[in-house]
Length: 260
Image (tube, rainbow, N blue to C red):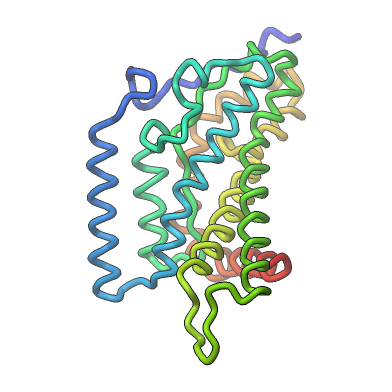
């Protein structure tokens, strides 16, 4: 094994916190955003589907992140478990920028797709049984979870529609339950597909990192800290373009229609 492996730990941008503790700023930010969304919906600036999308996007992102810690724990690293991150309580997972600000900006700006990220679950790669191979499994656990949730939403939607559950004859109005399922399916496929892009710190970069020869890992790690800036700028400016976000949304909608 090369001296360059395991990769150096990434410093937390959040400073020292009590594991699993509640960040007061995050709670306040979430409450403010919720109030803003309610006011915007009341003024009819965004649709109920967009609200459903945003509300299903956040748990999709959180479950994506939890799955990393669950698989890491199965492979020998209980860092996330000891840090209190294998919990369905959303507060310890919320990243103010990635879980709230960016999704809200994308939804309100009319972006065809919206995504985000949760606070990264801590994983100590060196504690895995087979670090280089199992680190790939840990990374792909997130997109896999989103894929499972996508199919769960789509197949449930299909079953309910086939049996006419909640549907009324003579009306074209879509029941709220169907909107939530559709929004949840599209939110999950968006998060899963976007995270497969091979750009640090997205999960797809684990596949790229696995192919990088050991002698070049040190150089690869030097560019990793700039990945999040690139991801944020890409989401905020490139995804809003119809030629990019529009085509991605069309592809996701086609996948949804094929399954549901």
